[in-house]
Length: 253
Image (tube, rainbow, N blue to C red; front, side, top):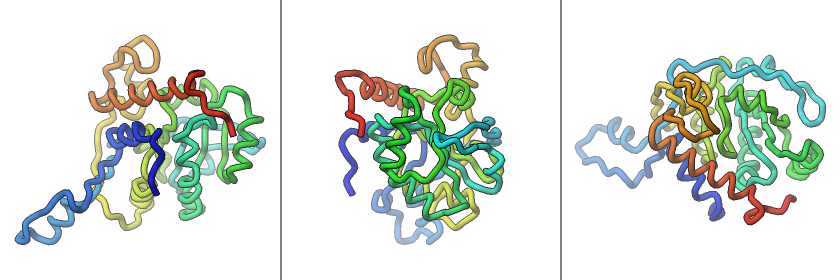
């Protein structure tokens, strides 16, 4: 399957922020190298934060009035997915999220946080048309703030079975990469190498800004995270704003 042209920017940015997958043909170790070393050279890399923080509290109702709470997350991997119906990359990844939910069943929980401004009615119509069978919650200022600010859509936070946020992906992210991360968190066999990193603002921009007492909007003036992280986030923010502008408006389905 060939991905549409519009998500190309988000794919490159997501690679910067998340999992780097080296093509198997890209590295050619010598024939004398041990088999374990040859395998390692071709493995993708999963990056989880070291000493992850507990997921922010969530106690609300979904668009159909059903309760949504962290109490139901115990022992599950959870994907908290910030999205909107008007966001083309968000719409593109929905079938893949549904496939992941089907594959992992009750071992995986997905919670969609809709950032649509027009209220739940349009979101309900969209959700029913797309057969989205996971809970959808309307975003509030408190929810967005609790996750440290969400500068671009889609943005997905991955939470381990102990309820701690281990990584975040902004923009489109490959289903196969999500699959490897979920399997790793469930203790299942994976074809990947797991590395850890210290969160210097890659996961929670707001918390980093608070540490440095930086004033301003979502991304302006922040020195949080690496230079690559900031560049990718800026690209995603610009795409987000362009899609929402009148000139680039996408008709609602």
